[in-house]
Structure formats: C-alpha cells, structure tokens
Length: 114
Length: 110
Image (cartoon, rainbow over all chains, first blue to last red; front, side):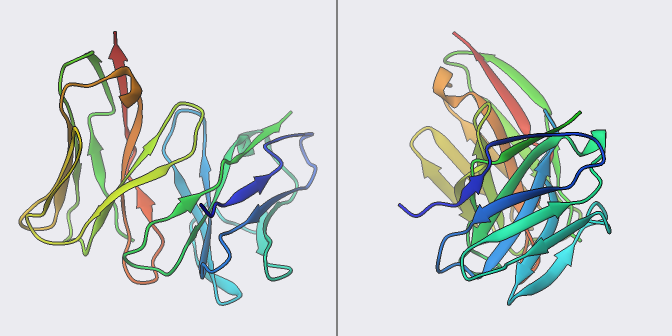
C-alpha cells in the first residue's frame, strides 16, 4: 500500500539552528500538507501546497517557515532559527485531490529544540 | 476558516463500556472526516460522511452526520483495549486544508 514517508524520525537541534524536515508524499497525489502536533495537543495545520505553490497557510506559518518541492518527489519544510516552542511532532500529509479525499499522514518527525 | 468543537477532551471507560465523541460546527459542513491516532502514532483515516443524516458502521464503530450537517458523532460499542487512542474529526472542502478538532483521548481500562 502506498504511504507517505518522512525523514528523519527524530531530530534534535540547538536553539537558533535551521532544520529541514523531509517528506515523500504518495506519488500520484496532488495536495501536500504540513501539520504540527505539540505533545498531547491537537493536530494543527501549517501549510498546504498545490501546483508547486503554497495554496494556504496558517498563522503559525510565519517567515520562520518555508516549504519546497525541489524535485518531483520530495516535499520539505524548513524551519529557520528554531525556538524551544518549535519542539513538536511534524506530520506531512498528502491527498489525491482536495475536498472529499482522505489525507494520508506520514509517521512524523519529532523535533526537539534544546 | 472552518472550525469544529470536539467533546469530550478525555474519556476513560472500562473495557466493554460504550464510548461516544461529538463534533460540532457553527456552519454547515460539506463533509466531515474521522481519524484515529494511536499513542505515539500518526492520524489514520477512518471514514468520511457526506450526506445529511448519514450513518455508517465499521464493526463496532458507528458514525453519524447530523441532519443539518453541523454535527457528527463517533460511537464505539463495547470498547476494547485496541480502541485506545485519540479520535479526531476533521473538516475541509474544495481546496481548503483539513482542519482538525482537538480530539477525544480514549483510555480503556481492562
């Protein structure tokens, strides 16, 4: 069964450093997302990406964040100048199309900022 | 964007008891999805409801969509320890991203 893969599974970084979280969405899917989940809390939407550009972003997704689809398969989330409060699980998800299709989530990257 | 309120936040049940979680929206929804997240895991799609008054069943799980398409519920009959996890409702339509409720964390005491 096709799946969304994320690397690394766990990333520890020093405060102020930049991190890149990587995702390989399901190959024929058109919509890609990043979500964040602080431990024990809800799954929060960060950004959606369609047709090689950001289609929507939340208030959380400020200038500290950026996304890229550098080639036909990878989808990355870059976090610049990390802060302690960026520590969370980051999930990548993809959907075949919008609207009425299910989202497939990767296993997540646990980011720990120290 | 669309928002959904989900209650309760936590539910502790004895194995064999029933469990229900509710999602409510102030606006009419085009559809609603339900996801389950096991402890330490990622959200996994369970089902989507589209039609007014729709009821769908998956074994011991029953999903309902309200007549006005503003609320939904997930009911589990005779819970088992394998049902442990957080259940989220999620809404989104067209090109808008899925927005998740806060989730209901279910604990099952054997």
